[in-house]
Structure formats: C-alpha cells, structure tokens
Image 1 (cartoon, helix red, strand yellow):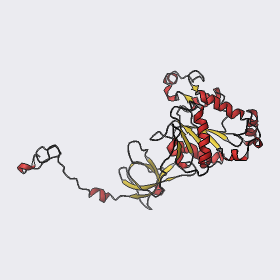
Image 2: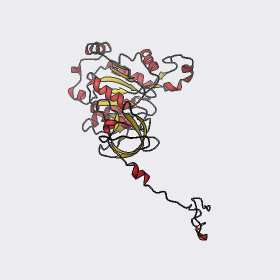
Image 3: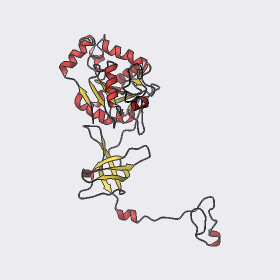
Image 4: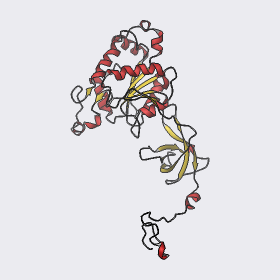
Length: 327
C-alpha cells in the first residue's frame, strides 16, 4: 500500500520561510527556469547508509535503527541539505523536493526521516516496495509536475532492481550514484547537466557515475514481445506473462487486452506490446495476440547428434540419440 505524505500550499509556504527560503525575486528568472520543478531522492545508499534491509539484527530484536548511529547520512548530503534550507540566492524558490523509496522497511524509513529532521524538507514522500515508476506516477499526480521537469538521484541503474533507467524512460533526468551522494560534486554536476538537458529534455537521459551522459533506448510502443502465460486470476481478470531473460520482470496483463471473446490458460504463448499507464507509471501488456494451441502441437522434435561423435552410430546404419548411444 502506498504511503503518501503531501502538504497544503499554506503549510508549504510557511515551511519554506521557516527554513530560510528567500523570495523568488532574489533569483533571476533565467536561473529559476533552468532548475527542476521537483527533485526526487532515493533513500537507501543514496541519502544514507547502510541499506535498511542489512540491519537484520535490529529487525530480529524488533528495534528501530538510530539515526547517526545505525544509519548515517552521507557527508555531502548534510551539506546539500543545509544549502537547500539556507538558499540565500533563492535558487530553489520554485523547486519542490520528494522521496521515492522501494524499501520494505517502510516504518523505519519514515522514522529515520523524523530523526534526521528531514520531514520538513520534503513536500512529497513515496515509500513502499514495488515499482519505482509507480512512485513517479504518484508524484506526477499529486505534485502536478511533469516528468520532464523532474531530477532524480538513485544508486541502482538498471536490471531487475534498477531504477535510473526505467525512470529516465518516463522522461525524468536520472542521476546514477552507485556509492551514494558521497561528494557534493555529484549534486552540483547534476544541476548543471539539468540546465543543459532542459534545452531538449530527451527521454532516457542519465547522468552516469563518472559524470558522463548516456541515453537509454526508449521503448517503441509498437515493438512486439513473445512470452508465456505464467499466472491467471480469472476472478479478478488479470495475469502475468513470463518473457525475456532471467532479469526481466513478468509482465502484467488484464483480460481487456486480450482479443474479444478470447481466453488464456497458464502455458499459452502470447505476442504483445507494452504500454505505460500515465496515471501511475505502471507497464502492462497491450494488443495481445494468442498463438493457437494447434501451432504449438504441430511443432516437430528433431533428433540431433553430438558434435563430439557426429557419425558414431550412423556408420553401422543404426539410429542414435543425441549422445551417440544406440537406441
């Protein structure tokens, strides 16, 4: 279940003044225009260390971690927070801040934000396990900020547990910091890159750990994938398709995406495209086509011979199996 904290505009105005934010008139309009409207931080191994799942002893003893003792902010994070709160030049006057974390230790994370006195810094907080794109779908909805106007920091780049690449494909400029925000240059370089990137805002753009810029391939909405039905819930009318390699997550599908009047069973082979729900950032199979079971039944198994013994049995006119033994 998503846990979302957002503050009313009156409270946000008071909060900004309390932490020393100056009037927007202090900063030039060009500076404000080149700043993100929303800056989003991951928590584990990005703002603080270690990752909360590593605190197994505390979990077993049912104890909460203590800030500055069990969990510590990266040194550069402290300096960045002070810069944001002070904001003498009004650089962040029109910028909001958010958290997007997939940790399963939801209560711990909220408690640590309190202990570190960071709650007032963040206008929006999304902490729940699952898909980071769902976090950003929620953030877009509650903040009113478009993906192209966001900047995101995370330690996980790609793969099954990656965050930067899938979020960048939404249109968010994503900063990969595998060792956390351990030095301030990661922050300052990212803001400079955002200024340059804001001129074109190409989806799939990432700031890499070495400060280089790469662009991930943006999914073609017309590209088709093949997979096999792994699970079906007929009552709720949805299921999951297994496809791709071992690191690929199973793809959700709803029965409404199936051809009219069609039904599927576990093990059926499908072809589908992938669509992203703009409301929550979740992917789902679309335009599903079902391979007929007759096609699968008509497949012919062919005998093969080992390349180590390619003709060992055929010399005597005998049939052979794949390992060269007579049958």
